[in-house]
Length: 406
Image 1: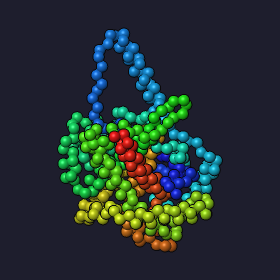
Image 2: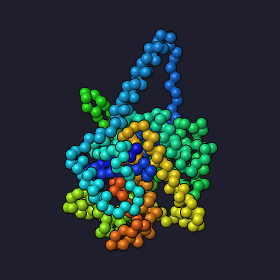
Image 3: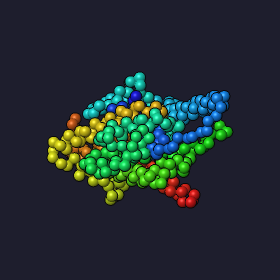
Image 4: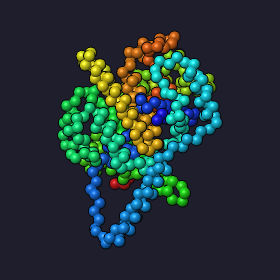
């Protein structure tokens, strides 16, 4: 399913006009603590109830059925996509298509005419709690971690609700991997942590009187990240979040020369807005250069040429497969934000491993083999980094709330 998303850039670059984002092939969620979608991975004991007479059991069963149906209806309602668009936005799509079709494309673009494609305004579909949880959500993340993080089946992750083991030897195994595979795991864990923080910070607190109240749920946050609640896993998860933030921050600083080229246009249909948007982007990219503690990707894939090439391709294919798994998420809004942030990370990795190609770009125009970013990749990159920045900001808010609580 290809989704087209609104151009929603954080901070000064926030924009409400929708921009295409898409393909399934290059595009959230194992429960580190629960995804947009996922409840916490920590094992919870089964609830034990005293036996009741047969008739009482029938009533209890009926009550449970009603409760399950209500929960299902709530999850369906909260996870639904608001697909309404203004006439101005619809006209913008026509103008953008006409502009993009006139360009020389050097990478495969989404099929915008596909009946499965849809434009979605991100401003109308904020990322927050949707009620999507349980085994279905667990299986998505389980597939991501178990099948795509270079892990043998005999090694189990800590607090995995679908595994028979407690995962005691997991980190001994992880530390024995090469740098590239350790980085891969930390990136996925950081992405998962970021998604979970979004859900905890925008939690449905009350539905009374016809008006939903959203806000931070401290208990939900503790369930996913408190060291005591997660047997030490929460600290690792948050470290991986900061690691992912550094990776994407590094990518923004590395891609600046590409946007500095005169042939790179951020087409919106308004010449003045085109220039203003590009100026704001360059301002953000230059700010990232002033931040000294970036991840140094030059140590990755630095071994023997053939081995490094094989490992890099394996790295790429594993990540590509994760983007496909996101299509299995049962909640539309969760899938929307999961694919967006996954593609944002994929675009960041593409930038980091294309430094030579970016530096060798000419001023006159791109070559067919040169480095290129599609409109979808640009939108995903900026929105993905915006989500990470929001996660870290919300993390500080939770720390403040916990201080008050104590």
